[in-house]
Image (cartoon, rainbow, N blue to C red; front, side, top):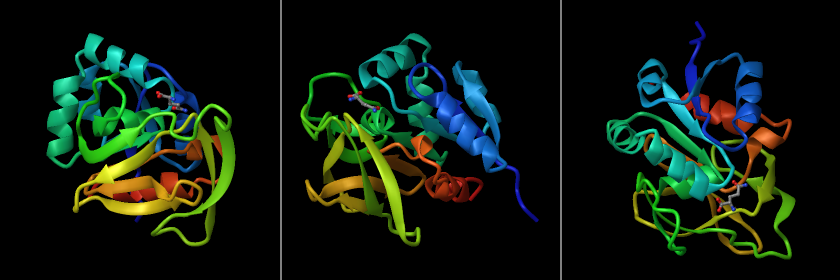
Length: 194
Ligand code: GLN
């Protein structure tokens, strides 16, 4: 029997519409999350790419912070892509924004520099067979983790993690929602309802 997952996508700013399209084309039931109470109706949440300073500002304006911190610590699955990874980090090399500190990762924003602010590269992602096309757009990178963070993918030029998992929490530097490859979305769906 297949389980129909109900996934929330934080729809405050960024490319949430692309995540919704990809989830729906994989048979998930999806809701745009604009208010904290809506989190009670979903089995997991995606924090999309966009501008992390704006997303964090809106998270605080709409009072999401304490609820997300609480839910993340109780096993609620959350996946952050790009800006979403920055939002979930414990620590940033930048002063702004003030991240939610959900995951034991230290993250550097815009880590690939201005010259190469967007590129596509095939990556290996532990738990998914074969190569995955990864789109990086002014992408962050993970520069430090605690021992209980699993490194799922390392980018070959910087030799730093671009996909990490800590229990119920997943973060990727790149944007699977901007490709035709839905395997990372399926990977996240498999983390729901466990
Ligand atoms: N550079 C952006 C930031 O720091 C993230 C870019 C993205 O999400 N594609 O928030």
